[in-house]
Image (cartoon, rainbow, N blue to C red):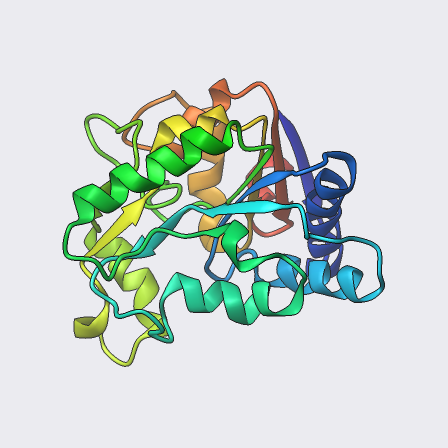
Length: 243
């Protein structure tokens, strides 16, 4: 486990982008696992900046996103597909057929989960998996539970997760109650995991996840078992590691 704590968001973003770009530059046909939300936004901006400087091409890169809401129509402004288009995909040269995100608009979520797992299996091992951590310790949308699933699956979101995501919707009623998420098996199978954490409100949960017991009550704690985990934190999120 390699933990790095930064005194500015700019330095954190540059470090995160550098790891992503380095993976693409050194691995022909790199496979990236990508995340959404506020945590990776600055990293994606830095990736686009470096792409515009001509330092990297994504023409041979394949991506798999962690998750997607269930029940939002295709093109909904708060869908994770639209998020990825607005923050990354529309600004780099990755072919559309090499982008993979679960389709939460389909009625048959079980079939979609199976399809996504088949795509992951066909692609092989993810080279770099980007993660954030939820306030309750979830990664992807793998919520705390008595057991965690290895496979891609539909999950009912915890109330605290919906509350955290309500800032992106006009009202709490509009926040989807379910999502499709990549399972813990595919996440932990990645060659390298890049965990990014920001903000004082994440300080306690990230400290518990990385230093406390490994438990499904804090899904991120399972990352302690990974042989190649890189953690990037700002000084507020990392304050309990500095005492």
